Amino acid sequence: MEKSEKISTGNELFRFIVTGVVCALLDFLTSYGVLALLNKAGMTGFWATAISTTAGFIVGVTINYLLSTFWVFKNVSNKDKTKTIGFIIAFVVLSAVAWGLSVGTMELCSLVCRNAWNINIDENVDVIIKRVFTFTFWGDAAFWAYFVSFCLRTLVGLVWNYFTRKFILYK
Image (cartoon, rainbow, N blue to C red; front, side, top):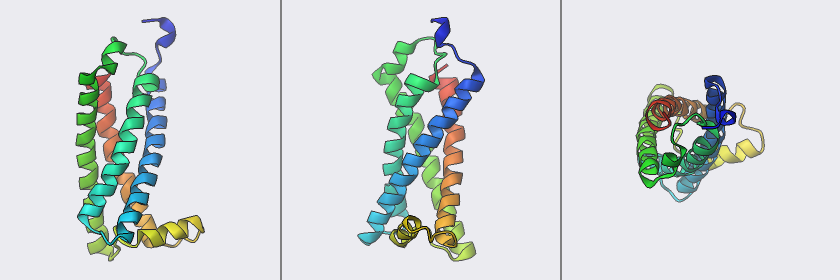
């Protein structure tokens, strides 16, 4: 390995966080947009959450693999291994576990919001999106409940993904 390719753990963690923010933003926009489309088509509840989360996952994991492989984890002993089918499958499987944790976290947040505060973060998303684009969402409890739930979901996935990538995949 060339010396110029080595980066410090701090730089690696910074790059991982930047990658996470970019992927989370793309995941959020995809998930939220798909949920709005599903709501408009009359689908709500668990399946709407699962489908929208899956759509966000697919976009996020694709971009995450590319950035992780070519930008974040530079201190890999065998870079060619990271481009093999077996590695990509392991990456997707470990990411799928993160997806499962994300769906579970989002569903748990949805249940808490519905039962504790009577806020349904799975419905009326298209109305919330219109408010976001007109900047009238500041006082919208459903938007903020969804946003906080999304952040919790992302944090769970971030912790899982960093440790599995750092200590299993890109060691």
